[in-house]
Image (cartoon, rainbow, N blue to C red; front, top):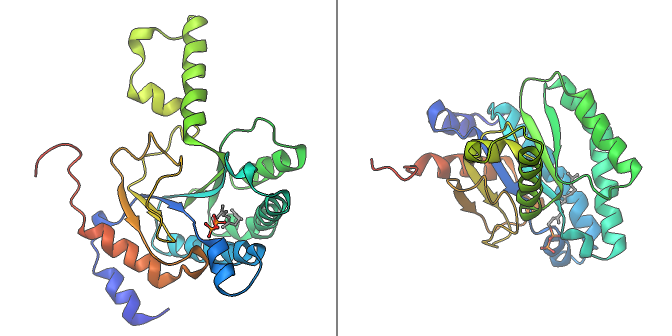
Length: 247
Ligand code: FPP
């Protein structure tokens, strides 16, 4: 490990570190294009960047990491690109699951399971089951995820519980809603981080990001490095969070 870098990080007080980081890994295609490569090379390099992110999160004892890997809108992309991303995701889970388990990393896949084929469902089930006992970093992979669909699914679930007499309308509060989301049981993200210069949420964690700090970087996702992660921690440490209160 680079000592100078490690020292910089020690300068951040533990209570100034985020507990939950949400990441929109954007710019794989532009990274590839800038190098005269195919978009699939960008996604492959994106997986390497994801591995670097997970390594950093484990090292700095971040409790939750939620990465946007495939949105419900990404099905609109050309079929060969969809196949590449699905293939990379399956390969990533299959090849890294042993390392995750060894590093005490728990995997959870967030998103709608509707319409997913059996091989994808099997991959999700295996990833979650093999790491269910892990108590270190929880890596949430948002896959077939869309925040509006998530809020709708939660609303339908709550309405059905009311219809069955399991829940009273007057007992519906923010906590009931939060628990009904795909992220049920997770704390809200402290940071939403997006690469590639775009500054929008793109249907990611809309409910959960009400009080998140937003951090945007110019670099394309495949260029994400340990130094980018340290920059992110430092930026977060400078933010004053008031949650609607005053200092
Ligand atoms: C955004 O880049 C990235 C995606 C839509 C997919 C993210 C996928 C990976 C990092 C690899 C697979 C994921 C896992 C979990 C193994 P873009 O294609 O939108 O880039 P562009 O905006 O430059 O075109």
